[in-house]
Image 1: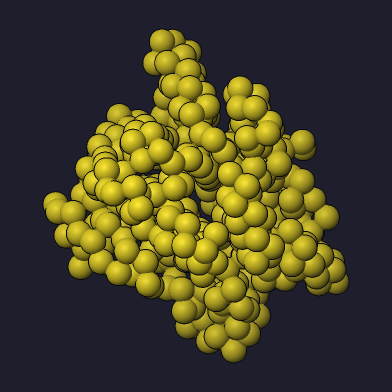
Image 2: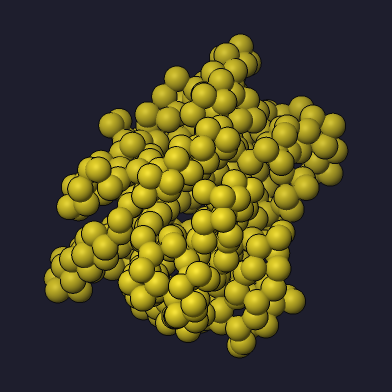
Length: 411
């Protein structure tokens, strides 16, 4: 890979602390460390608050060196309330905004053009931009799917499941994904879904997200947070991440309501997102649940250690459309995970044996799973140890990147 020229096009990038951004950044930096000449075209940072970050010009293109990589930031529409039509405009605006910088790199002298263009979905529409750049440059195209955004929109009600728009969206998704010389995604089940969409199996690559090495559990910091938030010695059931529709996070408040008499259990939700206000209204009056802002990266090790168990809700039908990136750090923290998902899904397979599982939408079953682990510290320790072992076995960044680099070299 030494001196190979690679262009990465992805809406989400650092300094966004959660979601897709840290993984696109991590992949770019790792490829650069393997000797590639890397350039990145990214959006303005906005996630998970869905608000522009200060210090980034919202209406202009800007190229700057970030962690040794040339990153071009593109202006795009950022809706405060990302509903169906607004979300489509949001994604399309980035694809259009990224086209100019992408063409500029594709039309350089042959010695300076990219040899490989990597694009990250979402935004799926960005595949069009990346394909045009790859064709003009004579480069290979690698599409990396973090979310099946069309099916996620159908599952969460952002797009009606029947009718012409749904059929067109499914057709467009499959058509765009088939443009890739390689198409990667983050779990075996999502790889199978790519094959079902017509991508030849010899083009499909598993490229998992990884546990973030910065988030080493910090017991001393965890004790400080417990004191700050008045958690004492209560069993902490923690959710930390985006608060949006596909999480089905409302079930956590319902479970907290069912366990309102358990003063020894505290629900803690740390996050930002379009459903935050509605969640706060739903939790009003409950004394066993706390809502806090998403904590900065330097406190994530402490946050992970605050948890006695991690909560990972997901709505029915979404478990094989996206494997939540937060799972990797949950497992690496050595704490059991309590997830809502169906048997046979990717999320079920990852959590089975290192946590507890219940059906999506069943608050009573979720509350029972939380209670069982809260009352059994030996089980928490055993399942947490298995979670840590599994993270080391399946989610090692070095091994994941090495496999990706080998496949890129073959391509």
